[in-house]
Length: 319
Image 1 (spheres, rainbow, N blue to C red):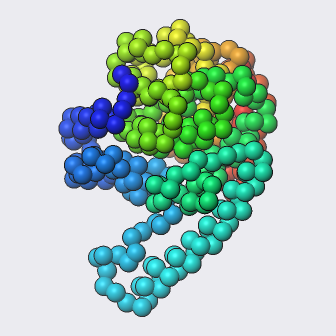
Image 2 (image 1 turned 30 degrees about the vertical axis):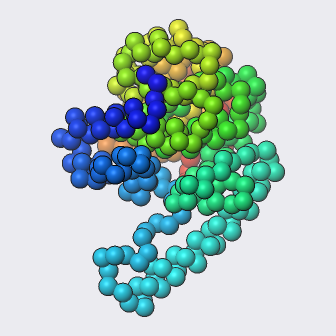
Image 3 (image 1 turned 60 degrees about the horizontal axis):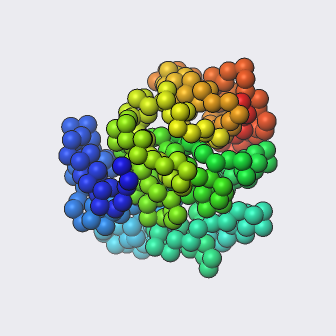
């Protein structure tokens, strides 16, 4: 179905009303869900970031001063002055980095309304998340001719920042598919419907509803992992996916889930996979890693780099 603000609000309410037995604490607790938050559609991208469900892009990590703490000069210095001064230094550094990306041809959207998430400069909004996504995009541009990239699928899109930056800079993209957990996808749906222009927004609620989409138009298509399992074998009938993207989450998944995603990806030939994942990660006693991802023999790794800071392997592969 086509997503707009009213329909999205209904989907959010329905999800919470039918899943409260699963989500009784934290960000997704029914206790956190307030009518006024739903009405403004700010709850999911504001509170999710602040609670740490996804990477936090906000510039102020805490309310200042804390309402639950008694005032003291020591507290005021540690939790207000020190943070304030530090944020000024961060903003100055980010401005330099933003300008470097601009010189390399990367543009950033301007979102003064998202002042809790981004540092707002005269011509653009920027933060550490967009710095990471911009570096990913530059890395891809070294070995991918984006004039030929029409359809993109991102597996695990977080709040939607990478998707927005891709579409903002690469106008050739017609269809951008996001596959994610529904509770996280509600965040990216909320963010992207407010931030991206010129695209239709579709939420695939049932497998057959994919037939409603005109893939010759520009679309952002949201597919929950539950529905993905029902349509993964036939999605290639509707469009050819030219580029797949995953950052961080492949190594956070069970091995059988990663194997399943690779079987889905490997339905397509003449396609790219961008992956940025930890070289080593132990999850539930099992050691995952970017070098252990199950590429078949048809893949060629055309560019890769290792981040010494995070020990991540960033790689573009062609099949």
